Amino acid sequence: MTVEQRLADVRGRMAEAATRSGRTPDSVHLVGVSKGHAPEVIVEAIEAGLRDIGENRVQEAAAKIPAIRAAASNPANWHLVGHLQTNKARAALELFDTIQSVDSVRLAERVSSIATRTVPIFLEVQFARTPDRFGFDPDAVDAAVEEIQRMPNIEVSGLMTVAPLGLDEEGTRRVFRTLRERRDRLQEANPDLASLDLSMGMTDDYPIAIEEGATVIRIGRAIFAG
Ligand SMILES: *Cc1c(COP(=O)(O)O)cnc(C)c1O
Image 1 (cartoon, protein in one colour):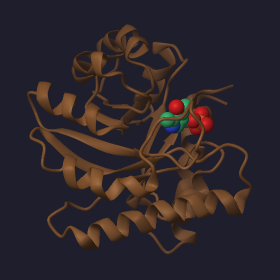
Image 2 (tube, rainbow, N blue to C red):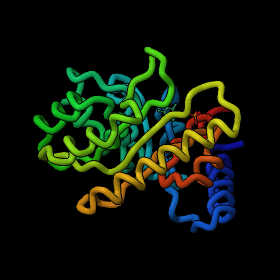
Image 3 (cartoon, helix red, strand yellow):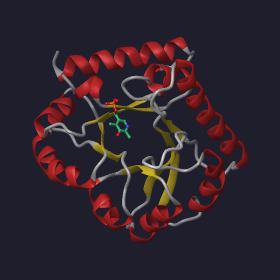
């Protein structure tokens, strides 16, 4: 299958999941995660209509994005979806439009202090309690949003999560539902906050995420692999 066919396949399944849960297909946005893939393949996806692209490492993105910008006939919106070290924040802001993986108040402070535009960010929430995973404890999210939304040059656009490995379908669904409930509560408690996106769902679980309210899904393998 070509990248174009894979993309069409994903879009079809997205629309089915949205319709199944009583939502309109255009209420879910697709970010194609292109880590590990060559610029030519990513350009192919852009030419096939992909507009939002995610990478998880600043260094890899820095090596690929200029070639992609030069070759593609349309600009893409770039999303950082992986852990960002504070000392790479400046480089990240030059490459990425949106930082989906803000995982500490300290990182948000750093982004806020060096940004020269309003940067949309997502707070990454961590449901797996293993030391190799980054993100806010679910119970710490409300206070973090409260603090970060007051920082200049930052717009809290949503919450993001990667479901823990090894959960069955019910467990995964529960994680996504919990994030949605957190978002709903935050929204209720902070009427000033713009409507928050929910970035959840990857190749193995995006239909479930959409059923549970995802507004952004991040898909790598289903678009780029193979
Ligand atoms: C790689 C990655 C994805 C995409 O994963 P697939 O399983 O290939 O769809 C999504 N989000 C993050 C944070 C990633 O690192």
